[in-house]
Length: 249
Image 1 (cartoon, rainbow, N blue to C red):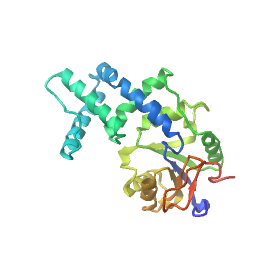
Image 2: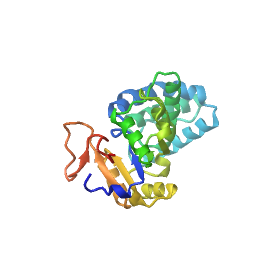
Image 3: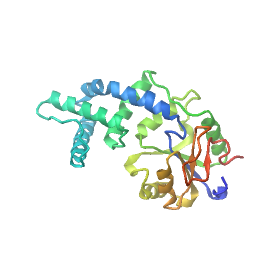
Image 4: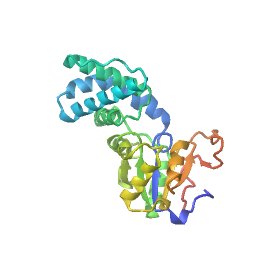
């Protein structure tokens, strides 16, 4: 932590996937669940104005992907059934590609909401996370999340962990509505929304390009490499493997 000025840090901004939560939980549990449930969810909620709007947003993104030469599955609008099948096929295609499409993330969050409510899904975090949250709260630091997953999905995950409901520790959740996680402007918006200068933040993520985005606007940032035997990527001379030594008492 030698590159971090701990005395300046008032806000700890955390990535989720690979940082607070195992990557496997996202790829082996959450994504497959959304893929399986997408069609039945859209059939059940196709008349809901919010879901209808999200499907229209997917249609617009589909047109963009076609123009960009990405070759998504075809989209038919000639009947209600054709539109539904097209949105399912395209949504599943986006999930396989780990798309950060905001409308897809919103749909996934709503599908996961049903899974968490039925207890088919439970949130998962690394064991050092609840301990760190308690420590940082005791230090009167503000804890926030920034993920490409929707705010709803983030809240559901932290509300249902085996360590209990962790959301009381978290002051704010941010998703791609503020912008892409690799863009400096997104971090500027987050800092402004919390009324702190960027240098008062410590951003922690497992993604180098996200770290670079935060650093570019003056945030303090550090890479999180969760695999105990994993080395930081080339050019990254500093990384943490857990939260145990991040802002200790």
